[in-house]
Image (tube, rainbow, N blue to C red):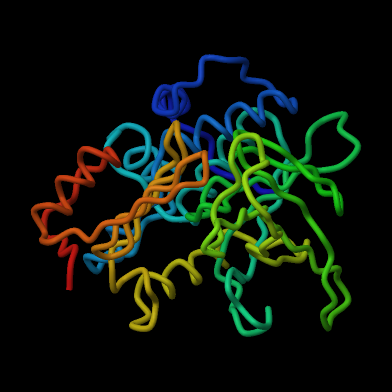
Length: 296
């Protein structure tokens, strides 16, 4: 079970104000799904701290200050899911911290290291735990948690997911989160539309994980490695994502990609730092810290 430092007075309220959650604060499946979706829609994924040479703090108070009280920043997976785990614990859920291999586009799962953080959440009275994850910066990310069960297709907020088992070496079962990707006329994979009926689709692996529990010190090491390793993509170019009412918005270096619920995708290259800052402000709701260089 994940154990965290209790929130200081007012910190939990600040978090719920940031995500716009006015529903119940109790440990049940409805609250878990609702808070998960509200967090995913409200707080963007971004790597601006590593980009400017700073290792993000995972201390609960610092996460509240950055992701909740400030209101104009986001974070990457360790920040999002560390904060979300603490919130869930405060509501009465039991949470186990997991690590996963991001395998989108990989030929072999073993080629990728375990660098992603995900959560296993026990819901009182539920027959099985849920996989929860508010920090996976990708169009195939979960917007709501899914029950830990194989080959059950889950539809939530216009996205389709399932969990499957994959063969691997080791004593623990390997779970794989898959997202349904629709194929357009050009053969390119696109996020599934809200009705899930646009075009010919395929299941695409997002990440693979076992149920081995990890602890807070493990993420301090992984977080430092990802923020400082010169080969890490997170300290080499801006990588920012946000869930929109109509789909998904991604800034990868100078390339801005907007995916819509009907399967259409728009892309354009941003020309300079000024335009990138304006887009981050107006489209992503992010205030860029001083001293951040957004383009090479």
